[in-house]
Image (cartoon, rainbow, N blue to C red; front, side, top):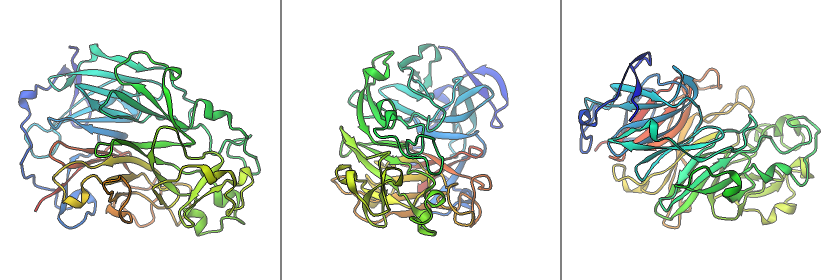
Length: 427
């Protein structure tokens, strides 16, 4: 097994070594001392948080192994590496050692059947976990050559435990216009991007060197999905759709402020094989609870037209909140009402009025046994931005990835500097 590059907590590259799993104590049943200020975030009564690390890098998605080890994907290389392993050796909830590997960036990361799966913006790899450590010599390419056009290029992944891998392929466009993001430019009909983009593809989780043509287009009509997870209770795929941009700027007569900032909706989707959610022709309006025709295709903020047959979300959120993380909670630590519900990390907006930026929070949606919402969404964690008038550049932190620990704790990553919170419920 090739060793990892070992780093100190300030991520300065040091000597080559690996952490022995014998150094890791079990956190099961351990009552951790939370930070006095919960790491700077607000949580519901009974919940608290400990800061796992302050600055891991530009963190994206996260997964936690059964022994408590934390793996994080980065959107920018740090010390030439794009994947981090954090380990808590003294069982205080804070990372004591950090290791790095992988010379690529990306978003997707997951663990299944003894393998760590990760993605770049074009490929999906897996590493055999040997005593909890990914063996770099065992790296295998599962999917290769996925399209990367530099916009909505991240490849989020999910596994269903039945041998299938799901990969998002975003559309390199706002709404498939003749001239992308140009006011007055009409939409192309039919949209040629849908042949290789704007959907979720299903692959075999253990078959090597698959191309996009080897996969199954599981769902289509999806502009950009970053948050993706598999619901173990219902056995179905869930996703968070980023709605299109520029309504208020391009069509102020149809979408006057303030509603123009809240449209189109960010969509919480229950994804079935063959689902078509309508992009680029359609968008969802949570204020009217309708899927409507985009103006570039003849819409007037009221017309449904060809969108009548498109699949609807199970919930709509205000526009431009940027849902980048999704977790269906299956743990037992949190109160029963959270069981099998959905946590969503909203990265925060840029495409809203300067004084009306929003998002920068983690929401919770209660789900029933049928996998559908049983109530409205709730703000679960807030205060990440550190200001009441956040902006992407001025936000102190921006929630990005979500993961569940073996004890049922909820982990949240920040994409600004890579702060990681571990949220706990302690009676």
